[in-house]
Length: 83
Image (cartoon, rainbow, N blue to C red; front, side, top):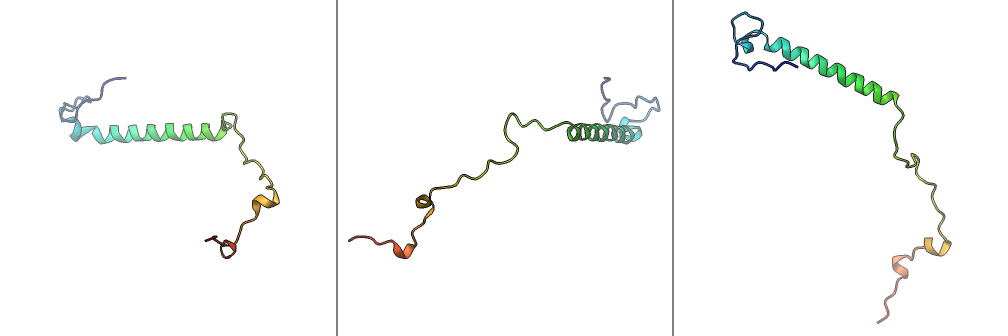
């Protein structure tokens, strides 16, 4: 890939003007369009490819039932401190 000219270098189109006054905006627009096209292609490829989960389950595991004594909570009023 050819090196991009500096803003104050002579324009490579041969007009004799500085690059920033002649072709900079046109080249920036072309670069932005290329980047947008590449990003859209990458997004389409990512959407079409199956997701790699790394061997992990995609759905959460089912909840585990707790024994009744472990699931009971004591109400704050029922808690008594022995003095």
